[in-house]
Amino acid sequence: MTGRPYAVPVPKGYRVGPWEVREPLGSGAFATVYAARLAERQDPELPPVAALKFLATGTRTPRQLHHLRDLAERETELLSRLRAPRLIRMYDTLIVDDPGHPELDGATVLVLERAAGSLDAVLAHDPTPESGPALLAQICEGVHQLHHAGWLHGDLKPANVLLMADGSVRLADFNMAAELEGTHAYAPAFATPDHTPPELLWPEVDERGTRIRPSADVWAFGVLAHLVLTGTFPLPGGSAEARADAATRYARGAEELRLSPELPSSWAEIIRDCLAPTHPERTARVPGTGALLRRVEAAAGTARSARLPRLRPRRWRLPALLATATTVAVLSGTAVTYALRDAPPTASAPPTCEKPAVYEDEKHGRGYTAGWNGTWEFTIKRGDGGSQVREAQCLLRHLHGITEVGTADGDFGPLTHGAVTTFQKRSGLNADGVVGPGTWRALRKADAATDH
Image 1: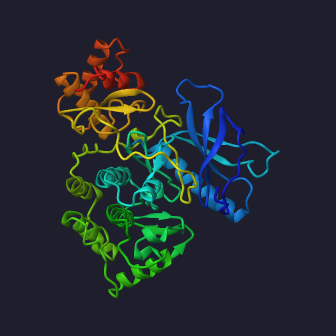
Image 2: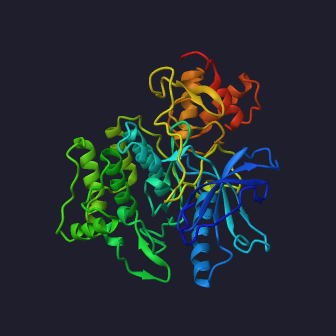
Image 3: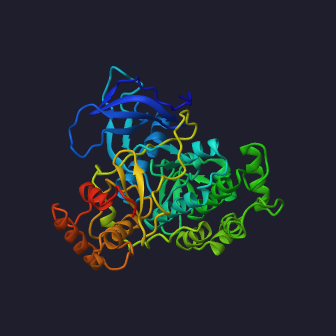
């Protein structure tokens, strides 16, 4: 526990709905996250373990209440509305009703997936992990998924990047997230200085908060990329405050970027463009995260992610309960040590669409993957799109020989629906055309005991 002003102390064994609180996983300025286990099975779709993120929205001053409720509502709204494989998933939201514990009474609790660790913990263990370029490609994919859906993250940093047990990435902690209104959005007047663009270090704030644009996430990604690849920040200074001052001088033309000479030229060019000193210059160099993602994937040497489908806003809305896998929202200031793994072990070469590879999943055992998505339990259906759809298409076509699926383009259209139905009939499953937990297990388990 960190003892920060808004950290929420919850005793071990405390019950919230069907969940029993276990050990603390991390605490930040606005919330505390605890491990939890399912003490009472009320719904067969709930996993045995999860993470509970407590936001103390019930026992503060009126001004604090307004601020904390705004943060809770931002994260809850985003997680309940967006369905994207690189974003943390939410199972449920709960409100604590316990007058006998006034410090908890009224608290908002997000029931989230549970992860093996955070990028912050990885970098503490190894400042320049070998898997860094591949992780950055997945992080950029997550940012693109957010922007494509009309949202900004607002606080992209290592502590808010989570790693699943299979090595795949999830973006987390959306307290500062904001939905775009045209070219900009409004976010709370709070940020992490090292990952904040110069124009937002001392912003003008009105009753709606700080005006923020997508280029703020692009700047944060540039800082993150330099940190992951070199172990250092791109601006000089021995503290966050000193580096913020350097960023301000840089924006005024009185300071230069100090990119590491160890950076490959392709990465140096990407980072330099992401860290253009002003919003107009940054937008001119990085007009959108779709193009940035392709550059990052090329520099990382990873396969191109599937293109995102044209948005149909109502199809992005979700019920409050998702049938998904496991990870945890770990906030800055985490005090837990994780078992780290840069990438899952494979029985052959790294996976591609044409040649899926065998890997070991801690929960499900050995199975095939075509992209490290960790999609044993995430449900996809007709009308969805993204890298998880693409992986299902790859497994159908190249592992099970169902070529009728067509091109692995990441769009769950009629061909994919028909191919899934064919596979389900062949496997003795309910032929509903929906790829849920049972279908994922069948897709991944075919002859998984031997190398592909």
